[in-house]
Length: 319
Image 1 (cartoon, helix red, strand yellow):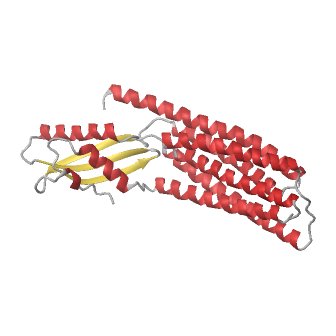
Image 2: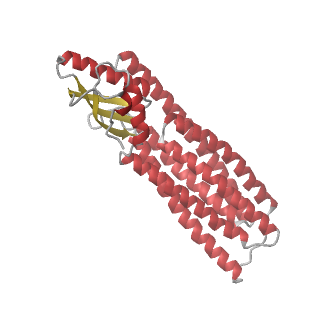
Image 3: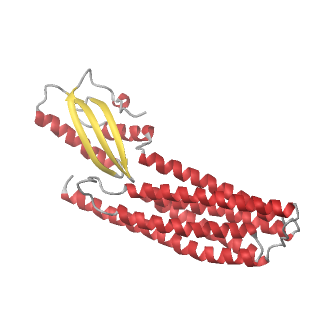
């Protein structure tokens, strides 16, 4: 990689980090305001569902702060122990978010179930929620639609597991706030047990999101790479490389949002070392041009084992 290309990638890294920080900070501020409003109105307005959603927003602030710290750690440059940088802190941040979400979901669920039971057996008197509680729930739906859209767009553009986890949580809040609004409406119509029941449903939605986040972040940390999609991109990038006869083996490793590829290619055994090295350099350059978020390519070349293969049948070693 040339110095010019390295400088360009550093600029892209800075831009990526700045976009991630903006998305996280916006979510932090919004969740802090919503947590204060929903918790206060949920208590004063006699709405268990809105209160449950307020507790969820309070948790959002806590793990949003963790994500902000971890994204800062991910920005640290490469060193001897971490030659590809520290970007896996973002996957760790997503893992923390998922754990927080699941814990919050379990807590909200049991509290809501107990509230439903108390109402049905007459051990608790629950009045209908106030109109203000309904307004706050609907406002939350609208604001979370905007946050989920913005954060999801940033997360997909930067390929950040941590930011995508926050986007999933914002999307989750859309459903939970909608459930709270439904519970408030039914409570005002006289079905007061529906409000705490919706709090339990909110918890189930939160739990599902937490499991999704955990699965995605754990997959990143275990080097699970989308084999089929990556295989097709590698094939497309290398079809026009002169002298490439075989792609014998490919290994891919994920470091946060970035990929490191290790390839073994087959070339004509009669070529000189310099000629083989030139083909390997062409392979590396082609992959850097065609595959986003590629940090490094390691190419080994050996004499081809058989006849040249047609481009569409080059094996990649990825399932």
